[in-house]
Image 1: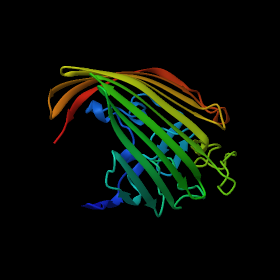
Image 2: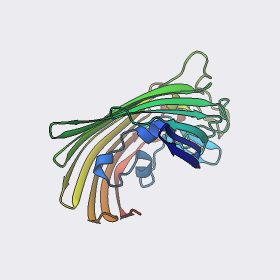
Image 3: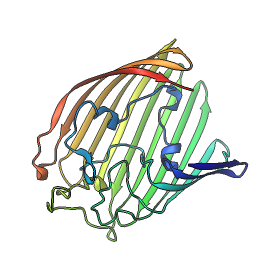
Length: 275
């Protein structure tokens, strides 16, 4: 992508996340890598989320950020910060993906969308706080809104976020009937879903431990996802860290698809590098 930075704001064009994801709370004060729900399902399969070529099935949303898609071309503008507040605007001419959520077989594939978002940072007595809000409208598909917060004080971080998707009368209906292997019933159930994420973290010397809970569910089916995650990071210096995490997952599948759910434990480890 290409970008221009000036006193009038930041202008970007290319394959990148939209302004909502850029300004969303992503545990920035923790300054360490944190796994996303989709990272966790790389270790523990989720029957509600699947993606292979054109065959995509997302019965629920997979993030509390309004957009996690970095592949579609976008125009993004971020205003200069004013009184600790930044506004963001995004226009996407063709939504060819939403982190894999939008199937190429859907009638709303390739439609446009826009996003508006806001981020605010405040310093109180011994406490730093961040807040964000966003709204997005995907033509013929759905609209959504999201918000979140982070509070930081003396090594402790408390964070939370929420996202809701819904359809309007002008949007295409959610698929209810199996038409082919690529168009299963409710393969786009994420368009009427909710998700929230809550967590707490503590940083002591070179060690940071974070416990978080992610929950998402479809308002059209009983599809539901629960992820409990304990993530630990050991910083050797400012450029790299060793991390070790454990997750417990409980995935309840969509009855209409007649798939079994999945539950169990996952463990992961690795080294994070920063340049």
